[in-house]
Length: 343
Image (cartoon, one colour):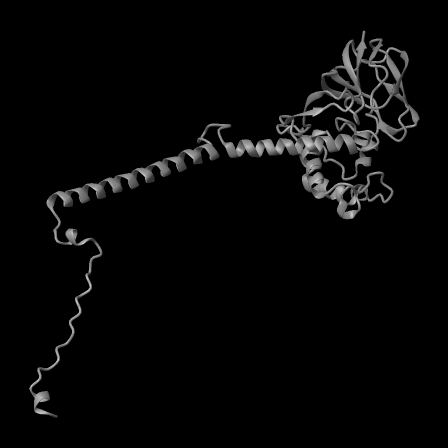
């Protein structure tokens, strides 16, 4: 190393300016937080909290109001949107079931479930404990052999799972109509006139069977094995039945569809008489019974005639009655009814 090199000053380190910690412009960095600016920040923060609180309150109020709208007000019937939608859907199901019934079932069971070739469906005792949804589902799924063990039953299979024409939803709709109550009202088109009419279901939810009511037979054909009521004897004569003073004649009525051709009958008081029933309905069972009351309000049964199928003719020996107004009726088809006047 030369003398000149020894006398040279040591090289100085290159100094790099520090990276600023703040990204705001320099004029701002040189000023501190003033009291005015601090107050403004606090005010803005308070306003934000109030806005958030107001938003939470609005959302909470909306949720509460919608809950009452959806579920209904406590104790207020008909105020629930959810219940109204459920009822509307149910009635639409009943309406579809009615149309299915009219198209597929009415020709055998009657337009009003009064029976015909097939059994009665609108009887309150049956609807209460016999024609349950599960029972109807089984019958529609496997056919009439389920009812009476009759492999040749005219009641066929209706569910498409076993080769029938109706899918599972249509089966449910059909059952909904059969089980519909008399407070379920739907607007349908009359198959005869094409006009819109209102119909109600058959089942009476308030129905209570009489204390001496007998169970509904498992096989509907068992109901046809009813013998005529025995004639009054000894001293236990019904107040409406008079001692016979002779024979009051014979009167013929005819079954035409599921109705009587004769709906008014007049006989002499105190005289027994005959009703000759000409059943022209092939295979459809009928009978004649005498009741107190009127055609719109049938009362106590006074005489019960045996049920028999057509085509045949049956003669009923009716005991003498006291003067008054009575009803003669087919107990298989309660819409087959007429007025019996005794005078």
